Image 1: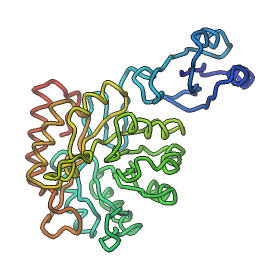
Image 2: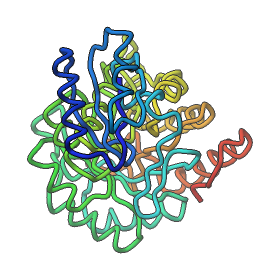
Image 3: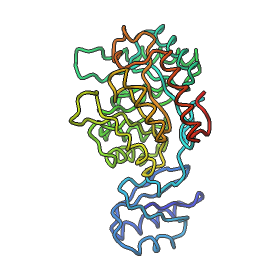
Image 4: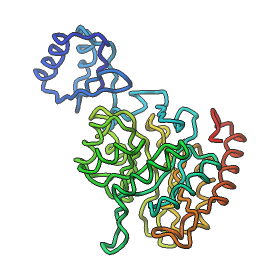
Length: 341
């Protein structure tokens, strides 16, 4: 259950609400949501509680929520959340297009790729400075030097920067440079890290864990929202199944499902789902056709020499052609509110 308080609620009125909930045996916490303070009440069993709470001074509205993910739920916010940072805008009909390499390798590589993805229509640049790798011997990223290169690419192109933080210690550093902090699939259920993201006011792009159910995915997002950061972008990047022909399995049905379940904007990462460049375009077009809010696509100016994931990276020219087709699909299906180009 969510309790929406008046914007001018007094401290004494809040205290009475908290005392009532405590005396009634209910766990509760406060959060800032959609520009106002709300009180989240867990495990509501009494049918009369909503009515009793509604009568208390300072309460504007009580919203019963059946789902365990309360702040993420469409019941909490029927309208779509729109997130804007620089020229990047996603949600509510706005299509957010993020392109760039898996890893920051050099200043020249990043700036050349940034210029090309912007020409294609991207409004945000992706690139990893801190890289979680399966092998401890693989390239781990340039770390803060990589963040500085991303900042130079932003200055050169005006693109918003999306890059990953892997630990609580890294989040603040990454947020100093990035416009959107990415939490990768391996950390999708790192709850201490998610709590730290909740303390931030930088938008968070949360990737689905490759073994997470949709409910578990939204519960991870709930940690961030409950901490007070309501700027969350979800990212479907494929899940691990018994199939091995592709790197992961991209569940296209998750896209319309999540749009019904939550108000948060959703992007798809077809590159990590595919693992091979020949599958990236078909998966991208399928995601666009079912109404995804944006894309996170790997683009490299020289995929054959990439230090990481070159096999799944598009060239700038391939990316440009793909964006054009995506816009045509969105126009045909009347998804467009604002085009990405």
